[in-house]
Amino acid sequence: MTLRELFKKGIPARYIMAIMSFFGFVFNYMLRININITIVAMVNYSAIERANDSGRGAECGFNQTEDPYNPDDDGPFPWNENAQSTIASSFFWGYILLQIPGGRLSEVIGGKWIFGMSIISAGILNLIFPLLAQDNPVYLIVIRILMGVCEGPTFPGMHAMLARWAPPEERSRIASIVYAGCQAGTLVVYPLASFITTQLGWEYVFYIMGSSSLVWGALWIYLVYDSPAVHPRIDKEELAYLEERIGKVQTKIQPVPWRALLTSMPFWAILIADIGNNWGFWMLLTELPIYMKHILNYDLQSNGFLSALPYLCMWIFSVFYGYVADIFLRKKWLNVKNIRKVATISSHFCGAIVLVLVTLTGCNDILTLVLLNLAVGLQGAIYTGFLTNHIDIAPNFAGTMYGITNCIASIPSFVAPLTAGAMTNGQQTLGNWRKVFYISAAFYAGGSIFFAIFADGEVQKWNDYGKTEDAESSAKSSKKNSLSESRKSSIKKS
Image (cartoon, rainbow, N blue to C red; front, side):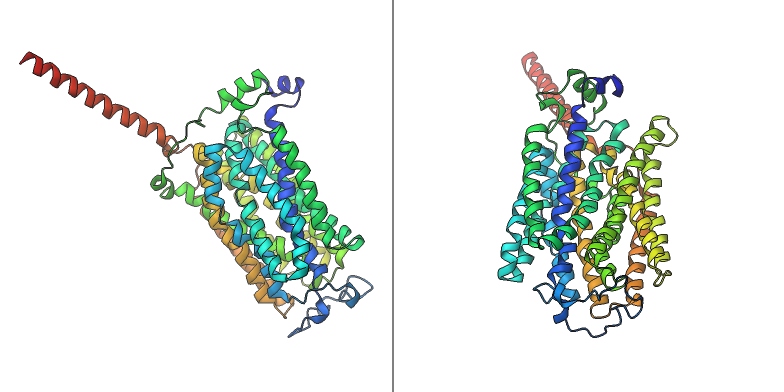
């Protein structure tokens, strides 16, 4: 059955899952990164002692008529750059804890509840975030850590869902739709948080976004199911189509082939690419608003809008790459392995070159913004590249694999902002920010080169580890039974 015939009968269940997952990731990112823009309004900059004030427009001047350090706009908290980076990155201290358990649990009980409850619980924590922050800033860090714990299983859980719902010839497209929610969430949260903060106050950013995520959670529980086989409303022809095309994913729980997995070079290729990606991506995501404020000197509303633009580019790139990759695969112009490699090189190696170019733009804010948009936009290819590769090489263990890679790769997610904060603390200068961009470019380039050398696109032998063990066990059992029968017959004859 063709896609056109399926669409005539209504939206296929797999695309309802993809659309709901898209909005799930919108809220995932809104809830986790709203602090990146609200912190600009929460900090009392007048109270911060600076060792060097050369970053306050001395190098690049102001992009507005008023001094961006107007004391009337200050928030209640006197946090320096190190403290701000600690608050922003503390999310990842908790985020790494449930990556591997969440991935494995998603394979065992299904990704619906793992993914759904992760977003719902993070939404509840967003609602209480402003209340506790008013009492003691330490509580704010604790809440951020707990939010990280809650959102830790989201990506591994979704990979387990995609392994059951996305047929190979549609995998790049569906994955790009689903994970485009990350960019859409980033795109929405920066200008929306800026607007809410200036109109109502920073506290309402958390109230509005937290409550909205609970509405999504109710719809998710009703509309989405773990697999096509348990969906009560799926069209019979779509069910047959999915069961025919997704033949490698087993419903039986299989033991993880840890030794084979951990000695697999394609697995390590994904891991190294993910480490490089997370360093560069999260450095830009958490530090870009701070760079906009201190170096390019934009006010809060301009900051929110301009910080969001790169993620609009990334969203467009991700959907474009997904559709193009599926066309190339369907027409057999490239195989899966080469599609993943080309996409990863496009996102990381080319992105590294663009970041190096950013260091040469000086105070040319227009050119700087264009290059930053391009650098982040190119990242849209990761969902067609290494980030979908887990499902290619081991669909039965896609959740576990993603949990492992994302757990380890989450370490750079909080180390990168801390490093940037330490390098620019009290020294908001172009020279220090150049060093930040150089380091990120090195991580991008190194990860992409390693992936290009060692990645694969074929299902690995150890994906059917459980079936192989069963076959060996069955063969041994049959052999024992035949030997036993032979002995019995020999005894009878004697």
